[in-house]
Length: 229
Image 1 (cartoon, rainbow, N blue to C red):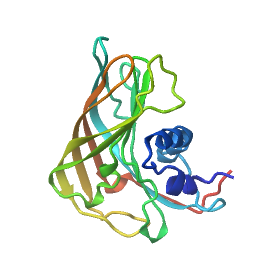
Image 2 (image 1 turned 180 degrees about the horizontal axis):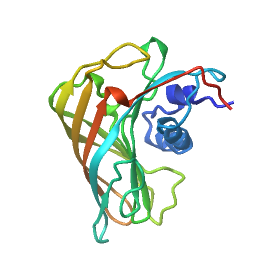
Image 3 (image 1 turned 90 degrees about the vertical axis):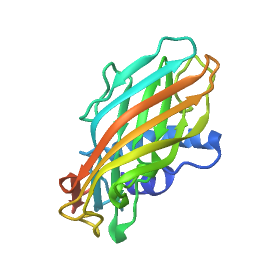
Image 4 (image 1 turned 90 degrees about the horizontal axis):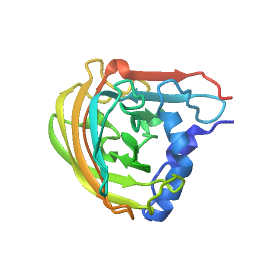
């Protein structure tokens, strides 16, 4: 039986200890990606399905990276959520809500990149639920870590945090009760700007990005009466 609800509600949370966090994320990452994918059937408890998903659409995005003395690289993110051009980065983002309006996927948009052979995960956790955001500029904390299971020629960089800025350029409508999640006129357009540097044995690993995200009422997917295999 698949128990995605338990993973989202428990195992996907990042513990405060960086070493423990890296191990937990490495184990939970495949489940997190699967749960956030638009086409996945999520079940809680196993046997029935009572979840609604508000998908976050990537409108456009550019990520600049560098490690030590290596030449910088630029990745253009795919609006469909696929692999970037050139291959190396992709973004996963969705808000998963269960009965009683509890938020089950709370990691926010997750950027997965491989920078000169160094895998890195960046969590824009403050943007885990765009529904309550108002128009204007805001700030949040970006969490970055290198998965313990990633293959790298560099010494593990561990984890780091950095402040990032986002601009809510349009905010119509607002939250609604499960399972519809939002009002019919709901729209959120958000521009995100971030930059973070982690130390590695190959030199500083830097990642900077400009990403445009959007949600509207038609992005809600209601799953009911499904079964798990």
